[in-house]
Length: 455
Image (cartoon, rainbow, N blue to C red; front, top):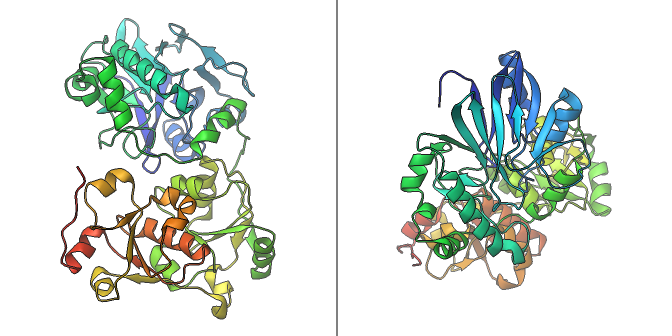
């Protein structure tokens, strides 16, 4: 990355995305692919005495609510975005070859469909110098954006378009910096890698999807690498197209008495417990869904929580309610019913449910059970207990009939997803559920087995 201009990546480790803040001169900044939680982006701009003058989007995002509309309404930013027809808010629509004069820089739109039909990459220039390319969800480090987020009938055509888009990007000089939006941890990515920025030359030499013999082989490789993705991806694009509600400030999380919570539950509300798995295990509201507040909280909240029912939060005293409100707003939950005032201390002890959270050695000493592994398919195939039942956490609610009624041990990579699965099983009436405090390898060691690897 050149040292004669200021480009700051603001990384959301949970969603696996990078928002870019660029100083374009005269006290102005450009923000590319902003998320709805703008606290960190605004802090970076304020630290540099910059006003956010432009909000740029590479595509209609499916994995988060965009912050572009918020920046336009609150900060007065000009929104630059691909032309997808009339939106619910003012946008300067760009097409292939369009340029925007930013003063010291020029932004040039490059049509790179594939991850989405309208996807644009942006070349950043300073005079005749090419400084780099923002590739959004097209070319990523070691991979490319998935093409199955629009509709099943468009997955293959978009994969073919993705191949051609990558070939177009390969026409850029080898030294061109590549600044993708999606990266490690993003479900929009077809594979995982820890790097977030690259160069055209490096990708040309090392990206597996650029080593294929041709378009057909590329399509097979890309589609063969795709795992599942959260259901909410299928509805956020339209919200971003129409224009999400402008929040203006942190959404409120009203306090609720135990009586209020009982009334809400009776009217169909759902309870989400954001505390650590150990705290949930020791005592929780019966039927509460366990989703630990951690970097991937927003993804699992959007995946597991019903958007059509009120949500009551139970949190730990040291968990910031603002963080919870923004994380949920990022995936389309603009307003929550509130939180239990005082947390679990406000709930009667005789109305508290528990779940067994045991280490591998203690679990191994219990009676034979059904082992349920709720990790993603790619994790499961790299090593699992022989005979383990595999149902991904995101699909568990739809496949409860596959889980036997006898005692169940639930496992994942660390314990948080397993506790989420245990809470879903509890809601479905399972009463003898045990959660592994650890990973499958720990349990395999304790029971004297080797992990099975699927070819």
